[in-house]
Length: 344
Ligand code: DOR
Ligand code: ZN
Image 1 (cartoon, protein in one colour):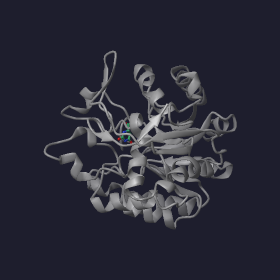
Image 2 (cartoon, protein in one colour):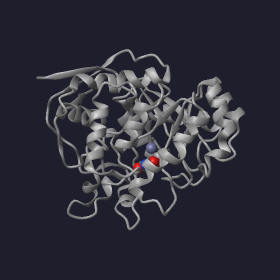
Image 3 (cartoon, rainbow, N blue to C red):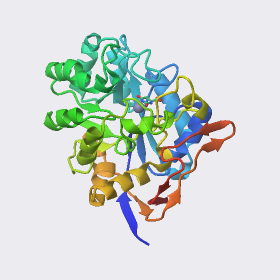
């Protein structure tokens, strides 16, 4: 049996949700990843040290202790967030980073930032204390075509922000375009990006393959094939600026398969296997460990994990749906066969 053993990886961007959904989702992440950057877009959003501390407790409670999983919490930036609260959370080890959602860019982002200029004092403080800023990089103006929203964000928002705060440590999250690959590659060492498993595998055609495919819909939306190719090249390049962040985002099946389906792809059940399949297709399995287990902690200035995970080359079927009680979620790769399997 062919096997692949990696230093235990981390997920630098995940939605674990809350309540019953948290109970279902968390262990899929924890069985493969030692740590994860947990998104704060709950209802209401996680904007205070107290809220993050309580949420972290709920996550710890939901995860099987033998997984040895560490959730890393983020603060949801709003127009009137207090820089002192952010700094206190960072110094106390509760907040690892802040998350910038442009208001109304995506799921539960209504309380997000309406104009980054309002956050100058917060960015200034984050730059001073070295706290990472994680960015959902899309403009929201309805006149900008949805497929251009990321590229326009680089030009109109992130470029100017980095001129004002040149030492701010930024992770451009879940990049989907060649434009972002170039932007991040050319930026200073303080700018990095995460790449999801799904954006390495789907392009915009997959949303319309024989009909509308709500389970291929996420934000930022998948782009043209040439962008996917650029992401695959970046992820497998060995460039330390690009590392793993699944953006696994579970939604109820009924809320995806709806007249107004939610954005999000639940990749946690198959994440490391999916990345392995992609890296293998690119002839770059030897590059997976850096991308999954080394470049993220290096950027976040955290130690590399001890321990390993092992994948074996065995075809296995991904279920059509994952059910628990009255929750039903369609996972990424549903109904397909994946040829790497994580050994528990
Ligand atoms: O597809 C997405 N789903 N993109 C996001 O930015 C948010 C996420 C979610 O929370 O469902
Ligand atoms: Zn996300």
